[in-house]
Image (cartoon, rainbow, N blue to C red; front, side):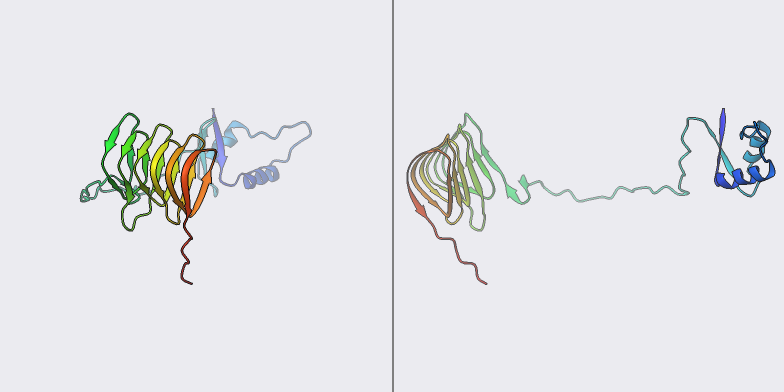
Length: 197
């Protein structure tokens, strides 16, 4: 079964109604020969024949764009995310030594030594619930959920001590948040630097 789809169906309906007025009891359906005449496309309003239940065929552009592959030089991957190198000491690992950080760091294992942010870098250090640090941590943001024994120095930055944390030593901070941590440390507030106006 085919259905007619007119570009201007109202115009055809009006023309059909004027040329063939309905008599009482007569239905307003076009007979098969009239429908075939309207579909031949020879009239002033060309029409398109479409199977009932099927969508109109998509309009295809005259020219399909083609993407040509471009040769790109292969750049070495430096393992950074947004220009910051991420570091992680996984649970079960034991590290002895010092580290200079250029990006975020997460400690889930045992670290013996000092963690220091590189000159010009602003980093954050997270000591997870399984993390243990015996040494000093210097970073813009320090969050402790595990154990630390040493100096936590965020300067004018912030320190967060969570309820599972056990902190011993000295804590230098600009802002501090303590959520029920085992805190056996000296607290030293650092005044925020005054920005030039």
